[in-house]
Image (cartoon, rainbow, N blue to C red; front, side, top):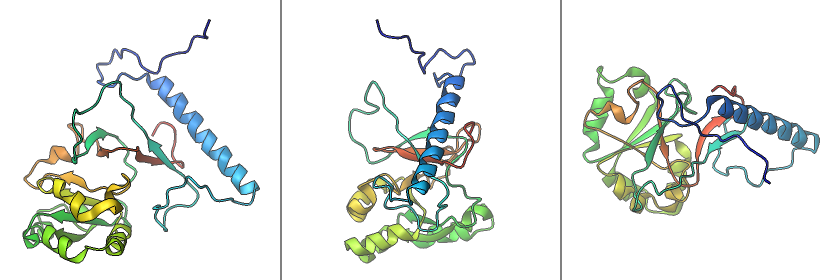
Length: 228
């Protein structure tokens, strides 16, 4: 007879839509971080051999003392009947990347004319903290004309940490950006509403939303606490 195992899912009395046992989730996060720490010590003792599974697109200036923690979501049923270019969203209270980070670089891809959106971002009414992180506004016509080759797309990919895109043109981007951006979910453009819909960025409680794409999503770095 198989040994009993406690299910990760349970009926939560608090009314939360997430049917996960918080204590079991905390134990899993604690065990994961402990395993990452022990593996790091083992690699250091063995002369720091390279991890072949490490993300090749990891930023050069990222913290070398921590490891990226990925989130993979598996469902019993298909989330959607058809493949869609607009990624779904899940809510995380503590995002991996924040607009508060002084080194964060954002590229915003917009519908034409791009000047309209540059003026909006430069406006005093636009949040100053976010506008200072948006380093480039790129219209679709300029994107199409300037980034035709694989190498030019690789350079664009490496230049910014996050790519945001007007949700009205998001389905056109796979043809304009190709496998460099859509081969993995690492920096796939995140759709944002340019028509005044702030719920696209945060939920009702103010929690940050992240995109849900195939192959998992970077969730945290290993230098966090299990509670986060």
